[in-house]
Image 1 (cartoon, rainbow, N blue to C red):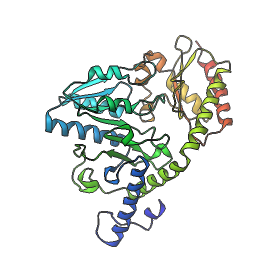
Image 2 (image 1 turned 90 degrees about the vertical axis):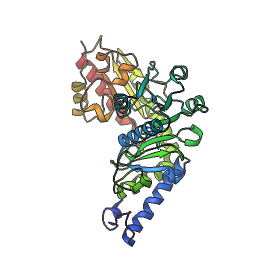
Image 3 (image 1 turned 90 degrees about the horizontal axis):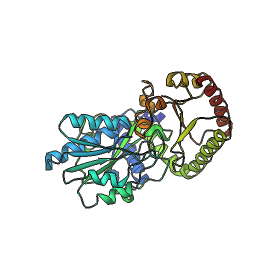
Image 4 (image 1 turned 60 degrees about the vertical axis):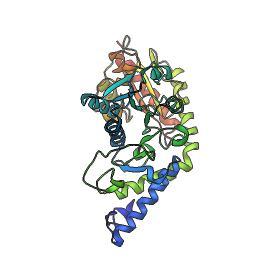
Length: 364
């Protein structure tokens, strides 16, 4: 990224040589991102972050389809990231018929429930790929097959899964996808949208012709180049990282289960996505207090959250955990750990020791 923060200062939309050099680098980054998910470079749009990467296609598809066909029914699940749920809530206030699928304790969308909500008026379905709080993974291929003959567009929030597990947009049968660089050790403040060629998608940001007239604003060149480099690294290390993290997660689970910790549950314990591990402390036995629990861990040098990092600062009970059927008090005693291949066994041993101390501190 450094050359694009120091020497290569040209605006990629300019026709002079300084700008053209940056433009070439951005287009090479676009090709890298496209190849990674089996897309075409023209189907990749760079945006500022994962939240925009979800807002852009959700609003862009829903509004464009409505303008063209007056189809107004949109469907999502109750355990999506808040940027998806609030987008649907806003569209509902504009007159769209927004439907929310309830999930069971596995935190996945059941095909029969989704099918029961689909009608001739349905234009868009948005379902998260790997849940950012529990790690549960939705079967997007099954969803796309369900909708293959219904002229329904499918969006997925892949912010959590991008760069960690294989994603083939053609095989998945989806029309749009969101991703964010920081989830695969890239820079913060840069994301991307995949939008399948032919997908109706109106811009959300107006006033510029960048990103083929669909996302105005001068490109964050250094961020885009950094994102592409993170993708290149992920491509070579993804399988090894997955296996390393899978072993770390299993070690974490085994260590907790073999410890003296009691009256807790592991959310989506059998998830195939190993990068997230979520514990809920039973509120019948613990004085659950998200702020105090996280403060205890933080004082001991442990970074964790009670939900999505975007909302953990508010310390509200996780809507994901509550929509899986748990109580508000249980949600206030839910701790989410994120794992990476850079973590070590010794760190997990340390965390388990501190969890035991925390449990004793918060026992009723």
